Length: 273
Image (cartoon, rainbow, N blue to C red; front, side, top):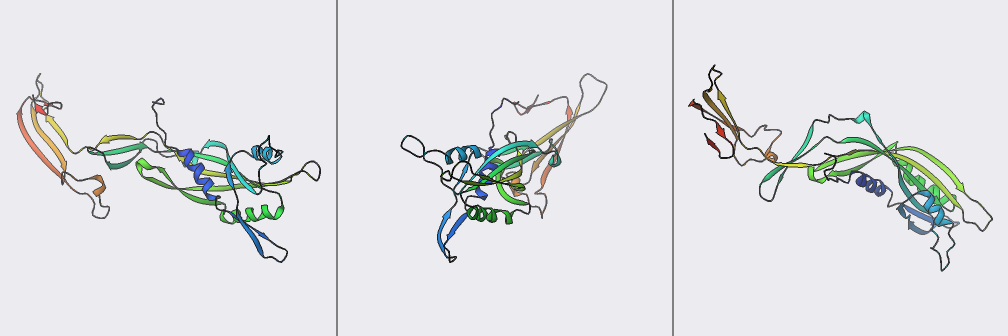
């Protein structure tokens, strides 16, 4: 079962959704009179804080990489954990009717598993005012959560609002060495995103006819067939998407046939034998 290939990109989607929250933050530079002299979009990238600190102290010459520019925002996943408080009934299935290439099919998957993914967001700047501008553009939106909408499983057309909770804020002034050394003021914000992981999605043809043969319970070696009960939707070409919550069911045709023989229905041939 575990060896079957599937990939719903659940964790990738929440990482992309989390980064999207912070990818349009603007920073303004002002002169001594308070006039705006420059505006810039703060760069955002995925990666650990140690990576940016290493790039920050890199000596930019012809033989080495260019040092990283500040201000900058970085983020990374710090852990995953199961959330038992949001556990769903694992035997229930999510279903979605689609039109296949040859016939209408029904796709389904079991209820998702709740997980929390923890993020660390780093706001790095070389002066305090730049760092505070960025932080103040983030904090008012988290009280303490901010909701991002994700299309979790396109095959099942599942769209869900995922809360992203702000847990804590830490501050550090990473300044070492002489006055020529570069300074980095870092705010570290930790978040928890409450999302779901989905299993494999399976597909099957829609059942449009049900047939049941009833036999007498007689003390003989050959039971006698008495009745055949059949049910088909009305109209016959109706789709599950035609269901109307207000008008209710679209209807069924029910038929009964009576027999006095010992024949049985053969599904491969579709005949009584």
